[in-house]
Image (cartoon, one colour):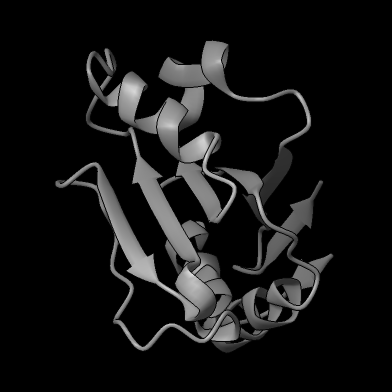
Length: 134
């Protein structure tokens, strides 16, 4: 899939939300600035969160309330090459039947990620667009 703008990435996230089934784990792979958090913002908006989604680069994780006691949990392990206790928290999130768990920079926790997760790779093109593969 080709994404031409930030708005298209947000719209893609909103459309993706229509296909979400709980629980779900989504691993986002892409360079800094590829649009991982932008996709997650669109996903959250499509899931009807009222909260502002921001990158969890410094906080490692953020949880957003959805309707019907569901939640979206967003992790970013970019600054955490050894997740330590965060592995336990992530494992709880992955196994939460009422959660969609989105993981950026998941290499350090790859051993605990479920095999049936959705892996979404976002790559830059020469003209600044993005190509998404699953």
